Image (tube, rainbow over all chains, first blue to last red; front, side):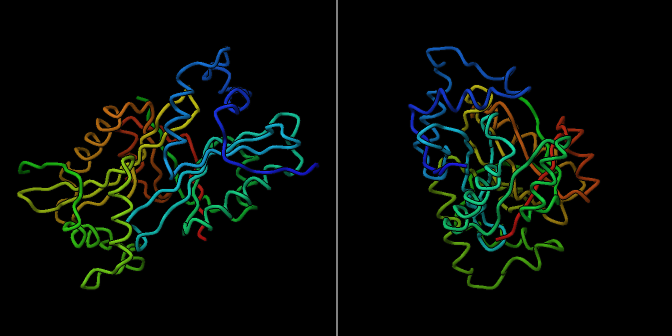
Length: 152
Length: 152
């Protein structure tokens, strides 16, 4: 594996990120990869970028975006006012999967949460993704909760 | 049940909210109900109150706080730039449980998420809380995900 680096996403990364989001069974139905980029993504990027508690990250290898994830830092009163780090929208380019990049991304994300003073990192994953479950358990996560979703 | 109302929490509500958070098996070990209120809660409240994407709510009955919940509005690129509403830290006063207040709180929370333009509402709950699972399913939530947590 070549040297990879992590950085905050820029508006010019949007086509690459949307292509990653669209590159799976569910994403293909949900996302809009038309050019020029749909306005909905530009507005969403503005909201992400303006919010200091959101960190939309890209992973690059030789300047090419090969992965993305979103960190949300969530303040709260519970657990003596602990901050939580939440990881969502993790995607890796198809030709980079299975080579340890996912582990590097999560180790980076957990370190970022620690650096921001979070006491807890949380994420949800589809209950049928058994490979993902093993992966998170190897990283030290505990499958203690059920994740409920309600589409509006 | 008397008339209840929902509003944004104020700093003066903190002792009542912390008392609610501490009033269960896990919370008793995790929270600090000493007086004067521990500084960790005041800092956490400031972070919550300063963030327009956090809505710490209290439910009052005759001006008395009988419940609390936290809404987080999370921007993202997935699903064509959809916003998610996330519900955490839901607590109801012991003497108000079982009377339909929980349902009213969730209906209010879901309506707030809708009003903020969210396309999805999400929450996690401990996998052993079978009563809670039935409750969320009755509200229309789908138990599609596993919730992973990592304490730092």
